Image (cartoon, rainbow over all chains, first blue to last red):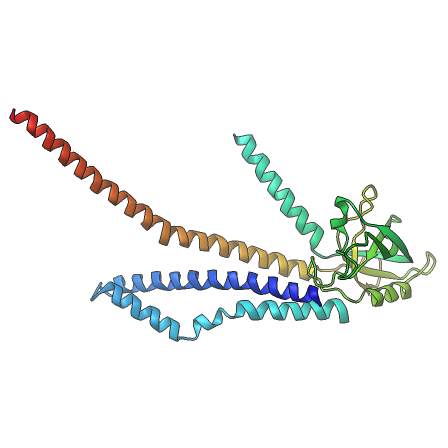
Length: 88
Length: 211
């Protein structure tokens, strides 16, 4: 039981680190894409405002929630491994 | 310097490769001939090649371990240990040691009527260090030269490659978006400082010219 708890805690911490890194990385990619878009559209208006607006829109969309798969996929993998090792 | 670099790279490849070779599952096609249980004194540095003691028995350094004896198609022998991995490393979550022992006993066959099985296992056999690979599963196969496609390894190695690629891309992004602008800022600051210094020097020179 203690082993299970340790496994759970360590797994959660590691996945949280990965989750945090991915959030920062994807946001950085989005920001870069928005900056390029702004330049392609002819550099109209304030660059900062355009990018901030785009970031807000990104955060409202479904895509950042997809990063929660970082927690869900390992959970599924764990269930599959557990089943295959012990019950197949 | 070049030798040092290549030695380091070779060492890293050896370490990572060895780790993967030890941890990832492998399949042996064998004929199981016997099983036995033996008290093992698990101590010293090789204890890391055995499972960690159960909770509540952390002080005991010896315990009974199940073994599965088998013979390969070429006549060479191989002995597996049969231990729970539990929640520990490597993450196979094996709890069915007793069942596997039963299956192994059920699959015992002799030379005249051989019954070939594929034993999934991880770990290394070392006669000198008394190391045994840990058996994970037993599956009957039609013959001694049946082919087994290592799907699990394909998936895991592909996944690892994707993770490495992701880390590389993340670092590149971090360098491009965070480090480079920072360096440019510092360079700009230096330029401003330089200009100020030049102006000051010119001023001082000017004093002397006037004189």
